[in-house]
Image 1: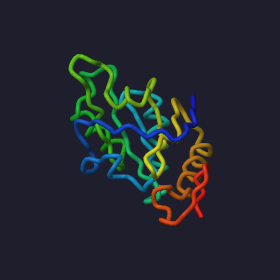
Image 2: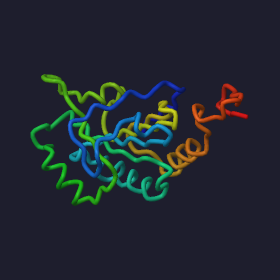
Image 3: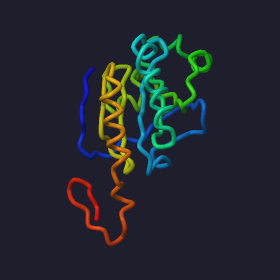
Image 4: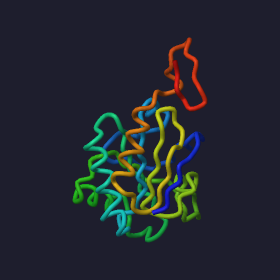
Length: 176
């Protein structure tokens, strides 16, 4: 597992070609919620054995406090990972959270959102705070307790843009 804890850079918007288990989602539409974005491929052993089950546990454990979103980011075996195959896969593995299919540019095997986030492979997990900032980026298997701690910290933070109009906020994000 490779982890990067990030400063507060704005998370890039997603570019998707299709959605499963929900209407289309955008980061702007999820503003005010902490987001866990799980990038996966259905033929990725680490995604099937660790990343997707962990994302499902996050969704069950944190409920409405956390928006868990899957991003099917295909950068190999394109012919085998069609929307029809993905739909069957999501049903078979009981993936209930929203899943977007990462879009491609003509002639480029790298998915658009995957590239924008600088992902190196799958599974990759990105944490986005309530203000839409990147706060964590993990590649490979993430320890459950490490991830739960990071998510809990983000949920417990007060969003900067929802502070009272007269509030004074410090550099660490504490507002009074």
